[in-house]
Length: 109
Length: 231
Image (tube, rainbow over all chains, first blue to last red):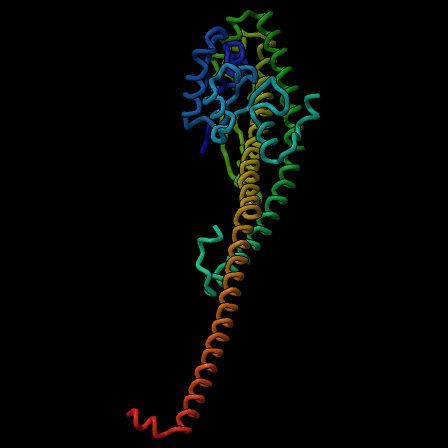
């Protein structure tokens, strides 16, 4: 099944990806992120044609708890965050919970 | 829980079977957990490399697009971005690592040549081309990262459930079964002791009765007339 990449974020963030040919994108202006980002992310997650969601790591803070958890643990589509450290996107927390050790500690020092 | 079972030999045998099965399951699951963690460590190394590359690509892409914006103006960049006709596509296949299905993502049409991009060559400058190229490179890294990170997420989920199962067997199921076994064994032993005691009692009573009868017979032999007279 062929899928596409989707980008969610501010217009500045998405423009570059559109230049590389990404067709699915949600533009949410910086000042409206608190209100509109939740809906944008939910819409993207619900889209069956999307295989990978690209977001800026900082934008995750604008999401409400439920949506944030949904997008972080989602496997289909997968979330890839940019601009954060190696343990971003909830992966670090999950490793801590499953293995019991914080394996990504040295990267953030 | 130990008091819920009926202390019968049949139950004891059943519990012994279950203990054997649970222990075998526990060992197998423990091996699975260790194997998964080892596989996970391999992927983790890979993921950290991919992440480092991704961050580098992202910074480069941002630098070039900011340059393009500064030189050409925001409108030109957006205009070029809106003109793209070819869209990257990804296809997912699955791979099996120790029973965990992880995706293998393949991409097509991410890297494009100049004429495939779809914006006019005359109206745009080389800086926009550079930015587009940088973002294409970034997309490739993102696809790689998505593959590795999805694999990690899935492995972590599997590790978590396996760990939970191992712990449930080790700390709940097996101790309960051992308790039950112990309880039934104790109960059966107790019943056996009671039985022996009861037998001893019966034997003692029987002997007493026999004694009494003998005495009665002796007494009857001594004065048979009285017995007859009684009748």
